[in-house]
Length: 66
Image (tube, rainbow, N blue to C red):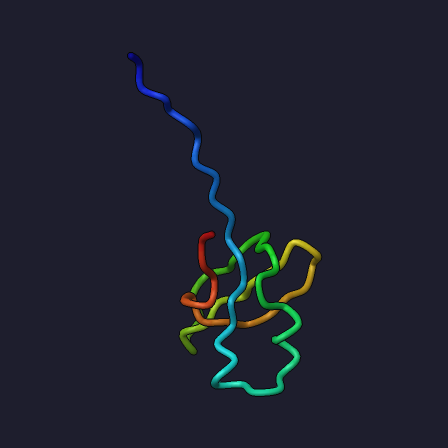
């Protein structure tokens, strides 16, 4: 009996920490697919570009794999 090797698909999504920003517009972006992430800035944040073209500043921990 051979092994079954199914490919694993991973998608990066935006999961902002809404506890630190209650009622913020970021709540509408929760779970949106990520297109790209820029380099880490001096403030500890990165620029995140979502698949729909929306750009936000976020901590690296707010971009997660699903």
